[in-house]
Length: 128
Figure (cartoon, rainbow, N blue to C red):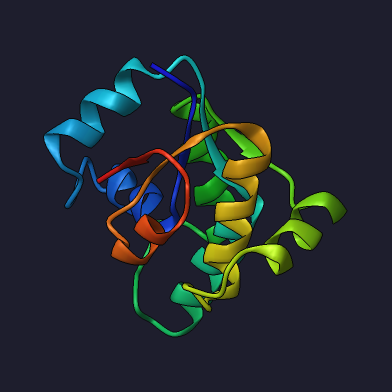
């Protein structure tokens, strides 16, 4: 099993005790040597809270730090290499946050846990 990168939805569902994650995804996350989340997911999580699309029991920064620490999830920074790679991806997916996640996975050789069918248009291992 390879290291995995959680899409923002996967992070949220994992934080809800599994949520809508498939059994396959939960097993893969549990078996992965290292599980990552992109720093862009912290931004996206904050945006979802601002729009009141999700409610967290703590402030976004406190929840993100506490959850990633307690679950031993490593945060991948969005650096210049990721930002530049996100712009070179084919435009099958136009969401900027997801493009950063895809670029991070490609640059680091990670599979992605997601339910987003648009990710299937990219040459990357997906766990749905």
